[in-house]
Image (cartoon, rainbow, N blue to C red):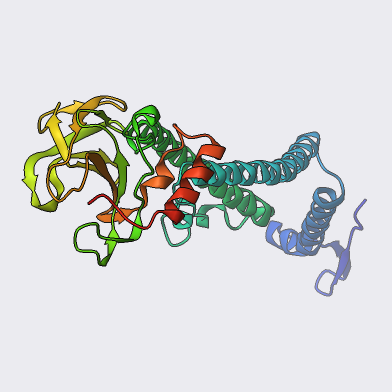
Length: 322
């Protein structure tokens, strides 16, 4: 109950009750109102800081749960990266077995667009964790995409390899039982006509005139020519993959230019045309324009013992037939 105040009036020689105006009362109550407001603010801050509402508690639980899920996801992505690394190792081994080069590393690390693609994720309490997970996910996505493109290339390489295996020279052009003497091998030999030491760029297979000559791999007939320099009548096959084979001193042809042939098809007949001292086949293997030793391409026709015997004979033979 408020105190009643009186004021002495000298004119009336008596005490009169002091009546305050509304404005005076309002001014007088301001300190109490301000104190009440300050107290309310302090209480509210303490309440929000130390005492959370049911809704805030639920939101906090959700945030904690999502943070835990993000951490678990990041750990699982590390495991996925390890599996991708294993797939990449197998990819490299497959490419090596198919005689291919490794998938380019720069294609496995494609750049992510934008100066800072993670700017929208900044400014939050858990921004560091969220951004690290986003980066890891982007890296995995790029590696998976690159691996899928590598597998596409591997499929093409396997198809080419299958075609290459039936195309490259792999058999002896003359049946073993048709060969009548030791073969004249690749390398430096004594020329049978000029009696000088010259490089013999193929292998000679002595055989009877008319002996069937076989294509040593699937190919396209690039050239059929009579009286070709010292080689006489020749057939030149293009096998693709950088390989060509030439068959010289033929007595006749069984193919024409542009014709497709399979391994083992008869393409001509042995003879002694051109610079030749006896009926035989002169056979050459050419890789990327360079004449190489044909003895390395008989793996479909020779056993290891026969191969060793042929190598030994090549070292003993000192002359050729052309």
